[in-house]
Image 1 (tube, one colour):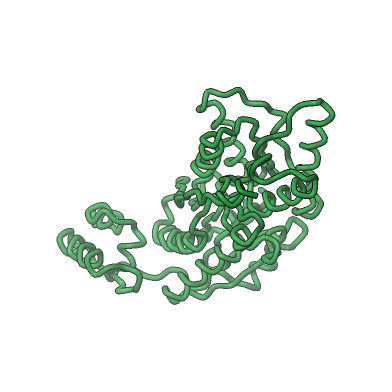
Image 2 (cartoon, rainbow, N blue to C red; image 1 turned 30 degrees about the vertical axis):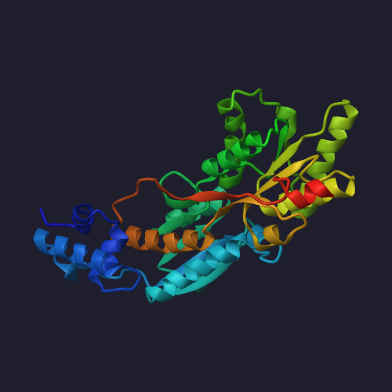
Amino acid sequence: MATTIRDVARAASVSIGTVSRALKNQPGLSETTRERVVEAARQLGYDAAQLRTRIRRVTFLLHRQHNNFAVSPFFSHVLHGFEEACRERRLVPSVLTAGPTHDLAQQMRLHAPDAVAVAGFIEPELLAHLRSMNRPVVLIDLRAPGFRSVNVDNARGAALAMQHLFALGRKRIAFIGGSLAHYSISQRAMGYRLAYFEAGLLFNPTLEVTTQPAIDADMAAADAMERLIAQARAQSAPLPDAVFAYNDAAALAAMRVCLAHGLRVPEDIAFVGFDDIPAAAQSTPPLTTVTVDKEALGRRGVELLLETAQNHDDANTTDTLVPVRLIPRASSVITRTQTSV
């Protein structure tokens, strides 16, 4: 049986994409790694002439609901990483936004991609159409059976946020979530509930609220916070002492509502977001958040497309996770300045 690129990757303890870049002498690798791959290929008798770049044109497909980069800049950073990786590999990228009312087949004919990276939420029927095109498809910030994907470690991020708040003595932690049709949001909501169990605390489902669909995202998050406050007052119950929101924009909108009600942040109520958008560090007070290398999501998406293109027979679901870390800021941690005021 002939030696395959997978055999070389296994022998060199690297990914298939790394083998491809090393043997094509492409940038992005250390010389030590490149030499290790070349030597493994030589020892196994692998013919580097077998490598052919099977894709040149790649399309970054984004749902139209994610297309407001000014309001939700997360995917602009993902796209930047995607485009940089394409340039390094001499691929031609294009960007396409679509929704359920758009003729995706016609748009794909115009873009004529050799491969597609889907970023964020997309309706099942659009995903089914992409599957029928018989081209390499990779999902970014999304997961579905039979597709390769790269995602934020959402469960770990939720755990870090909740452990941070528990360590500060917060017990009535609310969660403001969005549509659970979004893979990342559903994973963060699951991590929120699991954190109560792992801390040995009783989970109160009334503290978990979902933003209303079909309205502006900021308004929806503000409305969710208003509902939490109204619910507590109607029941003569204590307000939440902390809020973990599914993303930074939602956390900032909810925090503004609390400040407008005369609540002190973080003395009365602490806030933690997710994604570390630029506005998080610039808010008053600065927002504690879970940060992730968003550009790495885009870069890894390109790598997975190349690997998928070289291994059409590998249709198994594989999920690559990009690590996260918590950045504590003044929205949850009481500083000396806050104490003295």
